[in-house]
Length: 154
Image (cartoon, rainbow, N blue to C red; front, side, top):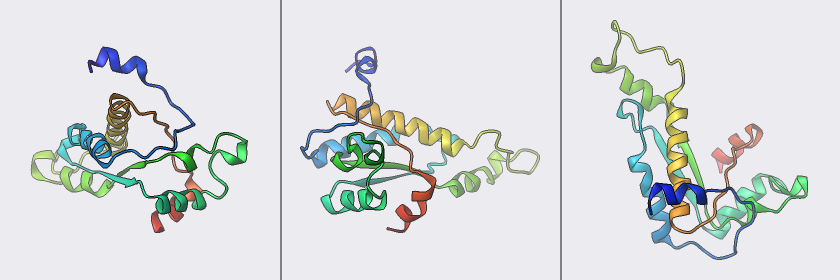
């Protein structure tokens, strides 16, 4: 699909059909991240994909009654057939920018903007567009700070 045809179809949703997404489709979507920009070719993005009922239920459990349920909204986190988390490893960027070809006056650059977050945003947009290209709906949510540690531990 051409970009001009794809972008107008992009929208966020909060209600999903209760149909599984095939492994092949998930792999194609996740594979788009290989083409995502990466500052200094640091490759600091990590993806966590949760498709199983048990894992998705655990995410909903960790979120308490659900991200949306407290606000009387659709239980969209609980109903999504796939959860895909874009994560970064900040250390990859520091390791790369401490190499000789990236040093400025013998020092790592001062990061005016943390490129690991910029790169994660670019990866996320590719994932959203790939989902649309596959004919799927997508939603976007950050992980609430109070939930982040519990989610990492599980």
